[in-house]
Image (tube, rainbow, N blue to C red; front, side):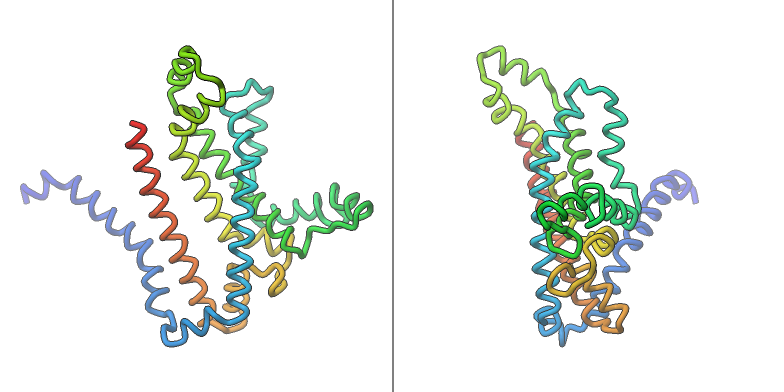
Length: 269
């Protein structure tokens, strides 16, 4: 009893940690044990599954590239720029993180739909239409995933030691050299983490995509949409197999990227 009293706090923490681990692990175990392994290969190589996986990869990677292209300058300005109303601007740019995805899809329709604020003039002048197209899927996924990149990179920029940049400039280094040799290595872990978070959020996007781009097989039906339709129509084997593929891909990428990020942090230190 005396030993238990002395170590009560440690025992309680360990017990709660184990319960939390089981909370995350048990659903994955349920997925693995219920996977139709005998038909797994045939299921994930069906035309529906392959089309959904292909569209998911194209859309999520495109969304991540757009986040890098447009999110990097915005994160830089939020971290270091003297912008008026910066808190309001930051809140607006990161609002999709907390918005229900369906609300984001409705907002996208009202902005970029055929009768939307921007989509209407584009459709009239050039015949361009984003809803129910692959481009619409990319727009929807970028809308909900880019804020994760912005927030992560801005935090990295704020946390880095700017005195190292000042020292490099005082030694005659140009702006581009300071960025390549000093800034980029220091924010590399945040850059990697933000990219992975953006990609994983885009890969799993559902609500905004189905609302704005629809669910057309081979056109806009990404893997999450295919999983939902398979489960709703009683094709549970397909839903489970595709879910396991997404889990495996996400887990491998997250673990690998985290290891690279930690290695980068140690080398910078």
